[in-house]
Length: 281
Length: 270
Image (cartoon, chains in turn brown, red):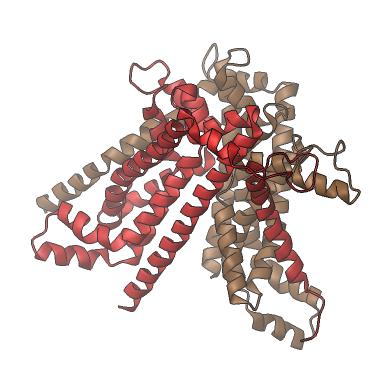
């Protein structure tokens, strides 16, 4: 008996290197930010948060939430359509090729992607020139270096991620069900409204929340494409880290904690729907 | 064979495939174009930009720095995650939710937030951390924890660790031998899969490299961003290289994931 307790104690001891590493570089940085954001002249205070919410920062949150919301919805809807087209395609080679493409492009992002969009949709970009030839002038109405340009670049990496998240749920959607529904007199619309959408809802909602967090935390694409022209939360935090703005560490910490709260909510929501999905299968 | 109107499926897939490949092809063409800003097609083709950008000493340095950072992050992650996950899986199921939590939390940690937290925590600590590659590697191991942990735990759950461990112990193996010579070979496809995901993420990472050490240790993505501001043609060659590397690694990831699935099926049939 004593030997087994000793052994299990030894086993717990075996976890220490990992736990120490995670504490030092994962948990402690977060704890430091939370504590410092709540600290003020005397004890715990929300002062820093009140101070952080200047019109400029509120605008940054507005832009970030808008960009995350639109690209998460757009990416999920487009991704679901493509996933449905893949799953129902009779051509096995096509199915594999497009799934592999989604797998590869889900890893494209950051600086190279932002640059590829400058080449494609910049003022002398390939698509801009092509559209000009057929009489559609993108510029000056549209700019790739703006928030809508950023939205297009974000949709690029959001869509394949959504495809990969939704495809497993599609496999659960059996072809016979559509036939069964039709033979019972259901219209196509009723089939979608009453059977397919409820079946796919957890996967689509899970995808929405993961994509939302993915966009909200993204910095490299925005920085390469627009520098600090588009006012976003990660751009603001990075500027504070570089000390470009007045040195006020507690202010930066409050901003970081606010975005952490948004990310954690998204992650919990994603986990919740992922669990629903696993139970359903 | 009669000509028929393509279905909605064709249009959706065509739109997706075009959207995914046009920016990449445009970047590739731009990198070999003499001039391409007033005509629909490049005015001429040249390899000058590729030769120019790869001839710089900074090109090799930054490429090597990124390969080094990726390799070291993978090794540190393997040493930390594999034994810990094995221990938790076989001996300490109570520790699993805690590991689960630690390995999902990085998804909620944007690069800018982690960088700020690390700087605020360690800026004044007299250890060789801030402004050195050490802190960068540590941050990389943390942000890639979800990939490595998932890959290792999925592999462990797919094999019968208990029987394998007992069999090896009966044959006189010590715990380290059990892990290295029995368990690891059995979870190899999963481990390779996780390692490739970690390497790919680290190789392309920009935010932490930019904020934690800046110009003192330049990585490939940092070099690329510098060029996007100064010379678009050379930047396009670098961007295409990044795509090619990400593409190669992603194919490796797909292939090893297929291998891991295959061995899982064999294991479950046995």
